[in-house]
Length: 86
Image (cartoon, rainbow, N blue to C red; front, top):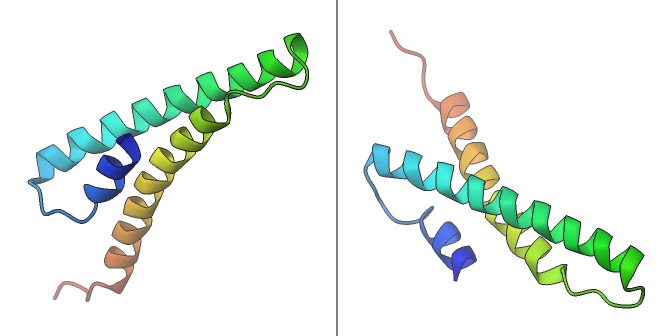
């Protein structure tokens, strides 16, 4: 659900302040999920070899962060392609 909201928010027109809040929230949640997923993977590899339960948490965190990376790349391309001010 989080991934759908993060990627869907890129397509919906929203006020600038709300996009900023969404960006901060998605990056924070994505970073936390990625760190907990990596920690869980590390724990599983050392304490429970042969068991990997953190894969979905890592994937969700990466997809959330990629949605904001796509947003930033789109902004950079828009700025680079914009005509100069007279």
